[in-house]
Image (cartoon, rainbow, N blue to C red):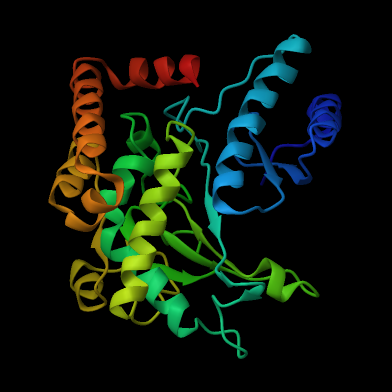
Length: 289
């Protein structure tokens, strides 16, 4: 069950009004399963504008919270017990004004299949940008709606890539895929660039994601996961960075100097975190984010 929204009603109303005054449309805000956890969704936009919007939304949340004398954190795992904070990324594909992610039957289209397959193939390296911090990997565990495996499925909340059911009456406008290993410690511009490069590589090569996974991948045996091509995702920043350094597609897409700099900074942060107890890693992230 979720926490009641009533204690946060004044904050939610103030936040919604402020966002609307900024020209950002809040679509919904509801309580989630974590302690004092709220989920906010805003309207979709083109990639660069969506990244800009993410920056503005997070700063607005912090500003409204401060103005009301409250405290907030959007860290991936501010407390070691219970659910954390995701920042899941929803992506739709268009050719002009025509959505092309799914076909007329509601199944993944050819481009959609390639896009999903590309994300799955490159996901360990992509996570160096979408989940770059030590605290990110305190959240990415089975049973946390964050996924620990490179799998996709229809409305499967334990799959790294979820084919989200569209809203009735707005099917074309709301058809999307959701990427779960994303959080607010990421740079939205680099994260989006990595995701799009991965998906476009899959489209260019005509990759096939295989059959969707309709169960929690963690409940399958290692043999079952292997037979379905389901791989474990990185369990630490260093594992994701190792994958990035081996990924020629992402290195070419983002540029070798940028990747080299990102890897150096992230490895230094990971080395510092390894010297700290897990509780301090979480508490530091809660303060910073």
